[in-house]
Amino acid sequence: MAATLQAPPAAGERHQLYEDALAMLMGTLFIALGMLIYSKTMLLTGSTAGLSLLLSYVTKVQFGIIFFVINLPFYWLAWKRLGWKFTARTFIAVGLVTIFSRLTDQWVGFTHLDPVYATVVGSGLCGTGLLMLFRHRTGLGGVNILAIYLQERHGIRAGYFQLGVDLAILAGAFFVLAPDRLLLSVLGAAIVNLTLAINHKPGRYLGMS
Image 1: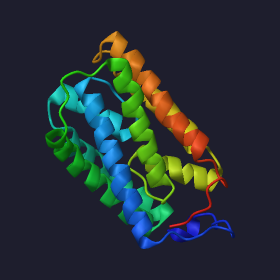
Image 2: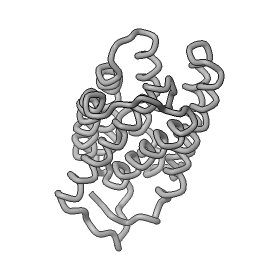
Image 3: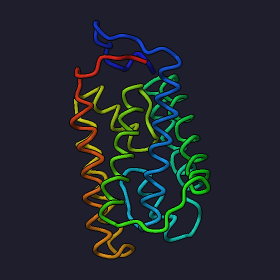
Image 4: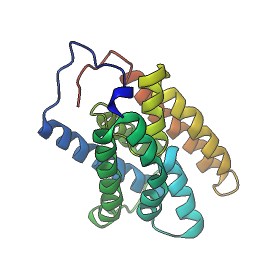
């Protein structure tokens, strides 16, 4: 519930509805494009998105469908600990990534993608997209919900927590990905989570949603 959250900073300025909507739109578009770049080069990210990608590689089921389903159990934690507004925004964001991940494949085509470039740009897009969502109190389901809760409730840096979880998921991909793709995926996870850790420190950004 909302009462479990720490009180927002007194100097914070509340986001307008259009600001939240624009951040959600752009953030989910960035993430969907990043996931497409990853899927085209058989890379893997962390969190529930990474787990969904891994399962899509194994089962051949579309990423968006797995991503939506795998996030369903985490909404209860969001509702109980982070409030219904955060839960609603997160549910919408997950739905948008599910939709955009399908549409982006129709909107964008690649004839060549260098794996190193794909790692840096794909993870940069995902990290920036997540930063937009986090700063407007929106998660992307799964580990993101837990990471935001731990940062707001216990002061554990969201980016560092997610990095640990992501490395565990990447370790599970050892038998699925080629060694070079696995190493690049570790680099990508570091880029995503360092983007969050550096730019989403408590007290640095005072906007509220």
